[in-house]
Image: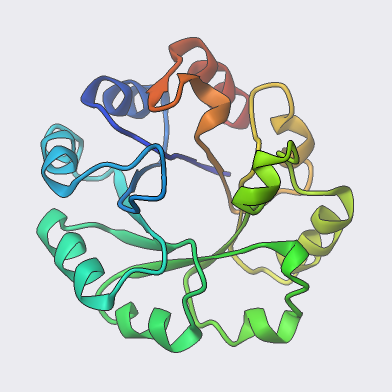
Length: 204
């Protein structure tokens, strides 16, 4: 199972996550996120990283031109679309980048709508407004439905409220990868080394 540490905002956290065994680091380029990073700051961090470490750009309902410019400037490996991006929007980037599309199970998305997306992996998360109201994790029912996709050999990434205390329950359904940000932080934008180490160790 692969581990993506998201919301990277500084070099220290990036190098520590990589050293502890993270497979991918996520950089958020949406101004709506409290973990937003601009491309120049991201470049300084990326320049210090092992070239074999996967660099993921996270975008939210942004213009194709803006995404292309940032992704090309930083030589990103993967683009993660966290908004209402259509299947054709995602397909636009398929020839140049690996693509992850995020889905929110309480959107009542059918298997058919997910299958319309020809992407490299599907990430399931809790909607931001639900997180604000205290719903941090995907429901047991949502996880049951997601487990079906996993059994169908789809690359499924699970996110939403993960931390060292609950990650073993997610590990049981054996997704392709897990994605964590707040669950390994001291405060927004700054990772906690002990939480990082514990989270990654339990996965690996």
